[in-house]
Length: 223
Image 1 (spheres, rainbow, N blue to C red):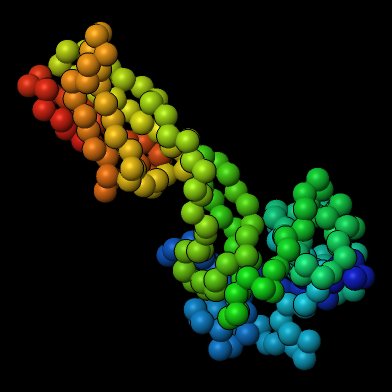
Image 2: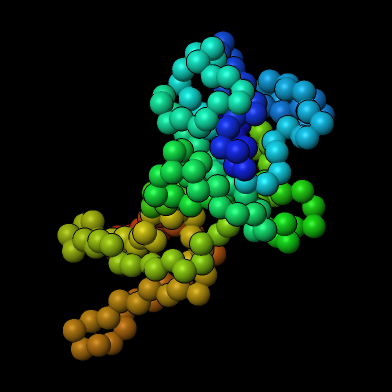
């Protein structure tokens, strides 16, 4: 259901009963001609498929017959919702109160790109989820910003003689570049014994990177 943030009422209701997501778990709705192509083609109205200005898109688990155009927003049977506007628009506060209470509307910054842009949901391995303005990517993974202020920590190490390793962790973001990092092991006198250059390596998708040492003190790197 699409809502107009100026009136807080619905202007488009789209039933998706009997449809399925594709093999990549995506389902695309849009006018003919949109890249993808759309799984459900919905004709473009004179005012556009999605209205400009403050608005919202809401997903419900309910029969299509329970929703009509021109009705006020509701959170009954609500699964997910995004309230959005441009940086020149007033806040769609009533839609926020009903559909995303305690949240904020997503601001579409028209200065972000010269070309067309979209609002994307970004997930990170540490559990962070947020909406951001990015490049168009219909039927493709969302293009999300790379988090740069990640803190890498020594998460675990083993002193067992035949299973010695050091585990690093990036907080769960995953695929963090380790360029510029060096792992150094010191003895009790403060003298360095082993130095491991981590350039060209990355944490795995769960944010972990393990450096292991066999009984000959040879370095074995295993993410």
